[in-house]
Amino acid sequence: MVAVFTVLLALVVLYYFLEQIIGAFTFDFLGLNPGSHLGTSVNFFFYDTIKILILLFVISSLMGVVNAYFPIDRLRNYLTSRKLYGLQYFFASFFGAITPFCSCSSIPLFIGFVKGGIPLGVTFAFLITSPLVNEVAVAMFLGLFGLKATLVYAGSGILMGMIGGYLLGKFKLERYLSDWVKQIQADSEQESEVWCGEKTSFGDRLPYILKDGWGIVRKVLVYVLIGIAIGAAMHGYVPENFFAQHLSADKWYAIPLTVVLAVPMYANAAGIVPVIQVFVAKGVPLGTAIAFMMAVVGLSLPEATLLKKVMTWKLIGIFFGTITVFIIILGYLFNIIL
Image (cartoon, rainbow, N blue to C red; front, side, top):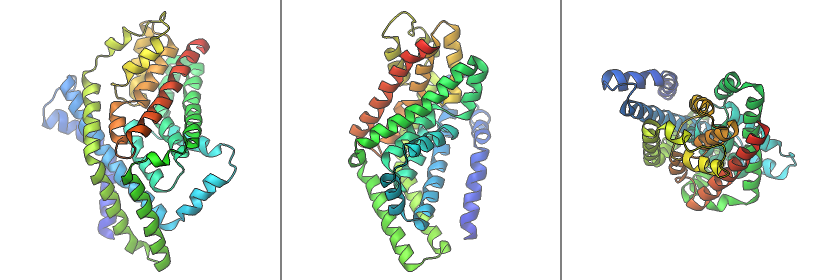
């Protein structure tokens, strides 16, 4: 038991100092230039890979604890049978807005929610909003673009998560989850029932919970490495000026083109806000720039790669297609409002 808690404490400390450790490894030990494309890409790859793996292990283990002590069927039945008047989607979207995760970092929580029996529509509400809005990006947005633009940006991100989660939930898409995720759900419920029946102590359950968490990490490791490698390459080598040159204010197709051009890029909301400031300064309409920002953080090739482990391609297409349509519509509305 002591060894288990020592490992968990070490992971927490590692996560807290991870950025400094990876920076020292990349730029001091490997000697790469912090301002170079290669240095930026390598630092991004190591930092995001380790961060996501730690998050995935910790969150999977925490959801294992929840599954062990709370009746999953009762929670699922409560969320699906009670008339909550959409509050479940609001709370999921709001939780996504206050968690400082990028699209790939949100996926460990998505897996944890699915494992814990949370309805898929509610889980999608979190997954949509989490990368789009966070408190750091809101603060930066407020300083750069003012209160009105900030309220429009944050409010639309939360609203998109609520509406998107509700619609996707109505489609009954659980059948399009991967077999691996379905097996995790079944094993989790069966394990919980056995432990409750035998009244197994927490100390005896914990090693199995952590083992299950590590098993999930091993299963998605290849997908994490591939996804983050794609993101690192795009993060370090895709020129921002290329996108700014194609976001013309007088072309009706500028916003759809903006969304398409944004997909290869990969960044979190706080990291893309300064880029948006550059776009606006070069004459790109603010609404178009916000649509670009949402597409960068909400639609990315690395995210699709990681999602492939938990969803079929059909579900990924439905999910990405829904977000794409919403962002395009919001882009036009933003340009009218702002």
